[in-house]
Image (cartoon, rainbow, N blue to C red; front, side, top):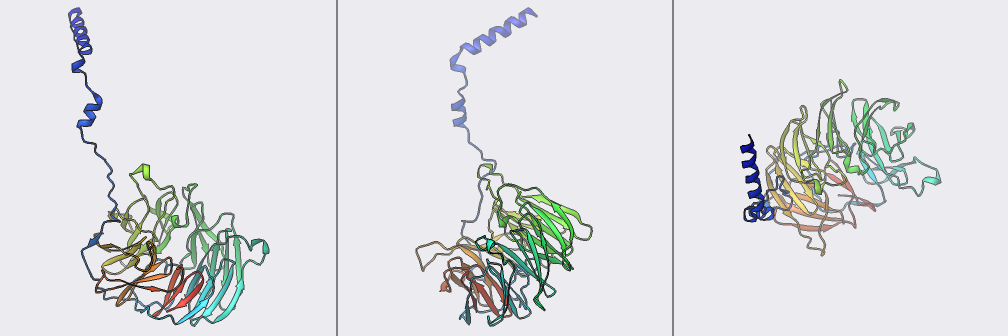
Length: 418
């Protein structure tokens, strides 16, 4: 035993005293290859030209636009329209607008609800908040129409219901936390989310609270954090903690939930943002987030069908084959079934020495219309996606709604009918 200990001691001393046999850690590291386990793979700036034209045969016609992003599923499809000449302009600064039963329903930042006919002639006006103390407060509203009633939520934590038949205020409910999501309807109930990531269900008749469900919430938040959609008895929503939930509206139980991951922790956005949730006619859910990926998810089970490293936060358009969207100054087309990028191109602003920033798009029979925040419309012919022309309609762009073949555009300074 003593001999073994002596031998071990001699070996130890010889190893420690021989400088030529020491391992140089820095040299060892320099010889190796540093492997990034989570490489940056964002595809937003990668040009793709798999297709040069867009072939679409199915087109929708909308006779009302009674919810934000058209309906409870936020499903917006190619439409039959031609944006060529401004048919009517109304100089009016509004915040939100909808179309319902041949009427344009608007609300401005001063809480004034104004209703116009389809030629933008004023029919009715009503002010929600008459107190002067609120005149300088930055009010923000969401609106939705259901069974001849206008529902309004705001960042004061209040909900109003206005009867559109007799223009009477049916009821008002007050809560302490601002409401920040769109309003969505299911049967005789409506749903919305507050800034603490708490989702509410209310009865449309009297505004009675049915239930509420609280989820995790962070200090940093944005209106893009709170997206909501309803399809086939399923309520699907996101929160500011980068989570998405699916609630069964028949049992009021959680069917599934997912957390959007970002493996580049050093580049993790402080504020989570998401595109609107869109659910197509086959029960597929499409969403993209600023955490770096776009997804197709099976809405019923929560199964991720595909995920690609691509970001967009704008409303996207769905056809039977394609998912079509914009991100900053890029126009993007995906194969809806497998997520393959078919077209991705940066659109150059030929009118000004300034990059474009798209906020919306329309796909029509002949053209694709891309709406820039500065009031430009970029027109791409369906037969040649590499060709573009520019039309200036205003100094800004906020939102659009459609009625049959007409498009109404809110420019923040006016409403324009095309």
